[in-house]
Length: 500
Image 1 (cartoon, rainbow, N blue to C red):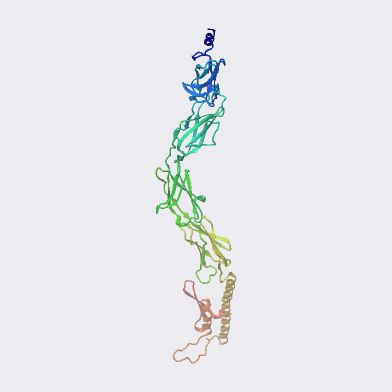
Image 2: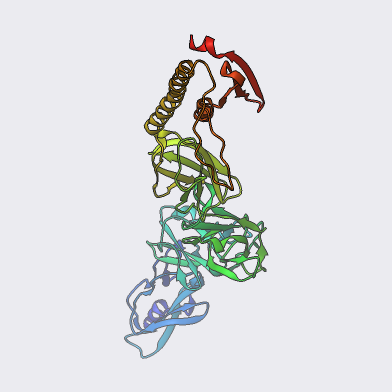
């Protein structure tokens, strides 16, 4: 009877009791380690099997008492846990099971699942976009450190993991459209969570307000120099294809594609044939937009001019008026011509419509020498080759010529006076009778009258423009002189008074 009483006292009670206890942590967060321990109050009974259970399902069993651990807790580890043991009494060969009371373990969220936000909400390509990974640590674990990473189509963006929950993309294009998400994690304990994926589509803005302008030194397109044609748009995103066209033919003279609102086309060494009307087009996939037409005038620098001198005679002399003509074969008008004598400016002349220009010069003795001209249309002056000019009849020659003629004219009156004196004396010795001149026998066909001394003197004075004509009786003579108006007048003069 005593033995039976002892067995009743020492025998374990079936079902759940405080004889077996499951020891578990009081607060569990994501990432924490969970250690479960099944403890009994005495060691009288031999444990042959120990098992741990969650929500009625066996998690682990062993042949001896041992702990059960969850290395990194997750939210799904939340549940009701208990342990069970199989006992054998050493003195009696029978077996009993004992189950601990259930323990509720609630794994708390260390931080909520992050949410990816995009700003601006309607992203336009070519503009910056800010991605934000929004989440917050539990107040009980605010000392944990969070870091973030952003992904597009499985590829990490930026520099990878960062402590900043924001990622600013300076420029996003249509090619950057895709599936985006972010991840947040703590280092200790290690918990990583991913946001839902978001489709980001970059909206493209069509091109508008296409314009064409030229860039040239001093605003002039000069033959032989470079020309830049700038095609630009005020709006338009993404890759824009720019093309330049000549209006006359419509053919393209250049084409470029790039992400820019303006593109330059350089035309090296512009030629005269490049002048004309041009326009450009821009297209980013919404259809080409055309600019207004731009007229391009190619200005041509003057060529080396040619100087020619035209005189009224084969050999120019003093007093002649010569024409200096300077002409450049090529050059955009207006052209200014300058004329030089021995590099000394003489004057200038303009050709508003191009071609050549002339300059008239009245020659003096000092104008023998070298002449040149210069052409200038504002694009650079060009000087002609030197043309020499020599004069005949210089000032010294003419002075000598005038002196000789003057002396010759003065000698005629002297000769007349001498002849007159001789004849008068001859008449006096003949007692004032008319002079008789012996005649030669005249030829029968053409008789020649005899001439008196006065008649001979009249011939000598022909150079002076007067005649001395003897009168009857030889007592006087008559002077006949031609007036400047072409008339003749006569003066009667006694011979005796003249000889006195």
